[in-house]
Every structure is written in structure tokens, then in C-alpha cells.
Length: 362
Length: 129
Image (cartoon, rainbow over all chains, first blue to last red; front, side, top):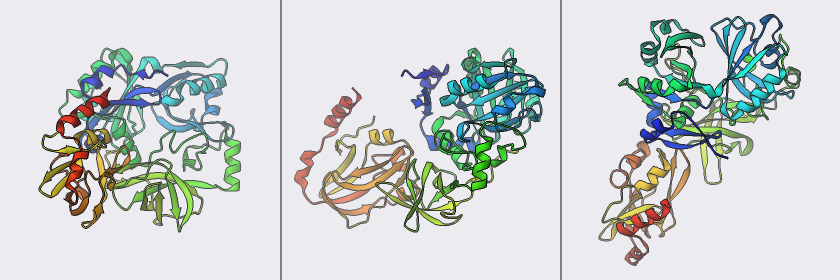
């Protein structure tokens, strides 16, 4: 299958990016050093090209919301200008996708989904919405740049105006810049103060260049993004979240609204009653070696689970990762072994997130 | 990719810099580039006896865990202990500060199994095709 291109392809190539396949897209993995890009994001600010992610627009009467029954969070209770993390589930209660819902207006929502699931999500959501509801997949015409890091407010306010400084964590709004009226949210996948800018695909090259005019902002690729999200214990669809996993197992009961009806609710209530068979844990290696996808987890010589993802964390200076273990298989601070064909890495179970002090609420 | 004259090379992208009966060994600029940020290097114990093209140590990068093979047979007389805390020296300076170990060569005739800089350059060109 031919890989899809971002409108910023030639910009990435000018910057000597290492490009590779990610979720069917040809995307920048790094511009020289994954580790340096992750460090720069936490110290200053980085810009990420996130064009590949999907965006949908839904308009309907909030009094008779059908979207509310499709997604695990109460979309009609989200205040206008607020964002909420949630899930799209199947009847079994396992995860089709994780997403963020933006309440843009009284009767209008934007949903941001993973690139790998965009087409399927659009089919499922549009087919389940009421006949009178409006649905549009705006992914192809919507570019997304993430500006993340303690200095991100400086950069974004220069572009979108001083009003951006009032934007609170997990809020969004419309801002006038580059001759249009565009959505910016104070969200991200790095754990730092940061903004996600949704702009017309035809203007994203100009915006990218404008952002990079700043002396302290550098481009960062998907490699750094993976380190940053793992240091915060954020799950990634395809690794921690799959159609074999329920949000309860992944530790996300807080974004399941059992007061309302939603697809998968019945199965999740059953799972709750029966008790979970496994749960998501944080793993910290004894040294710089990283747990890797599908390594086995051993405790007291017994296999108790598997690694979903891992990286070297330049901020903890150790290998870190996440994985699923049998419930009660081991507990926090227990010493485990991460086993692959080649190596056995001593590690321990730790509480998530790995990094506690960041600029996220600054 | 940087290839240094006066060094000898393996097909697996290790190098040896030979002086007398000793050789410093490491991985090439090509190898560090392919691996990406090196995040860990297994300590090599001095006194360890290695055979040509057999595993000397392991390195880990953001991308993968890989074996490093010894370009020559011999006895390890030193490990570059700076790599324990700063494995990124391999990325920054693969032929110098980022060397991995020093070996006392047991069989000088094995050098003929290695490529010189010219041949290694040709070999890399062949890989690009």
C-alpha cells in the first residue's frame, strides 16, 4: 500500500528528517536524535507535525444526543470550550479507539482520533448517529501542529494573540490568525504545557515556518513523542490499547460514565462484577536497557504478563515501559524480570506517571 | 557516511584500529547512524577471550538491541567505561571517544579477513543499491 504524505513532507526533507511508515503515513521519526528532541521538548519547546490524526465534526441537538451513546464520556455535559478524553468501544467493551472530544458550540463537537483508525471510526460513528445529525470527516482538510514544552505559550501567543494565555488545561477555542478562524486546544501528548493547533491544510506550511522562526523552538519527530508520552504513562493505540483490551484493564474507569448509556457498557459492568483478569502497570528497568514490545514479564520465575511498549527515558536515565500483568500477579515495587530471547532485564513495577514534575499545569 | 583511513572493517560494521599487537574496536559511523541514539552498552569484562566475528558485546538503541562482533580474535584488555554513563559517545564520535574495547590480538593473520577503508566504502555503496 502506498504511504500517505503530509503537506509538510518537503519541509521535513529539508531538515534531513529520517522518514518512515507510521499507521500508513510517511512521517518524520527524528531530525537527528530522538533523545535530544525529547530533552529539548521538556527544556524549551518543540513542534510536531501531526497531520495524520483524524478529525470529525458532529452537529446535533444536545437534548437528543446520539453521539452521547457512542462514546464513553458524557458529551452533552462537556462545557463549551472544554475537551474530554474518552473511548469508542465495541459491544464487548474492548477498545476500537481512544479519542478526544471537543465541545465547540452548544450543538457542535469535534472528535480527534488516531490515524490508523480514522476510516473505521468515521464509518462506525456516522452510521450510529441519528438521521438528523450532521457528520463530516474533516481530516483531509485539517492539519494539526502540536507546540509542546514550557515555552510553548510564548510561541503560540505570538501567532494567535494574547488571548491564548487565558486558555486553561484541556480547553479549546477559536482564534483569528493567518487570515482565518482556527481551533487551538491546550492539550497534548507530552506532559508539558502545550497547544494543538488545527489549521487549514493549505496554510500549514506557513504556520510551520512561522513557528520555527523562533530561536528556541525545534522540530521533533514521532520517536521523541513516544518517549514523552511514555514518561507520562500515556497509552498508545496499538500498544496499550487494542481491541483485546477494555478501558478497565487499561486503568481508565474515570472516563467511563456508567450513569448514561453507551456501546460496551453492559460488558464493562459484567467485567467489573466478575473482576479484572489483568491490569496495566508501569515498568522501570534497573539500568538503561529498555523493555520492548511483547517482551515477557516474569515474577518469582513465573510468567505473569507482557510488555506493551518501552523506551529509554533520558529524564529518568533508565529504561521504562508499560505492560499488562495478571491481576494480583505482582504489586508496586515488586522486582520483576523483562525477558526477551536475548536478555533478562531486572526491573520493578512502579506507579504511573514516571515523571511527576512537568510544566503541564503552569 | 564517515569511513576512516587506516582502520579495518567488518561486514557487520565494526572497526579495528591496529597498533602492534593491540587493536581498539568499535562500531562504524554507518552502524551508529542505522541504530539511532545508542542508549546502553553491555560492559565487556577485561580478560574476556573473544574470537573473530563472534559476539563481543551488546548495544541497545532507541530502535533495537544488537550484538557487536569482534573484528579480531584476542583477549580484552580494556573496556571504554565512559560508555556506561554516556553511550551516546558512540553516536558523537564512533571512531574515537566512542570506541568500545581494546583487544590484545592473538592472530595477526586474521587481518586479511577484514576490509580496509577503500573496500569498506565500496561495500557501503553496494548496500545503498
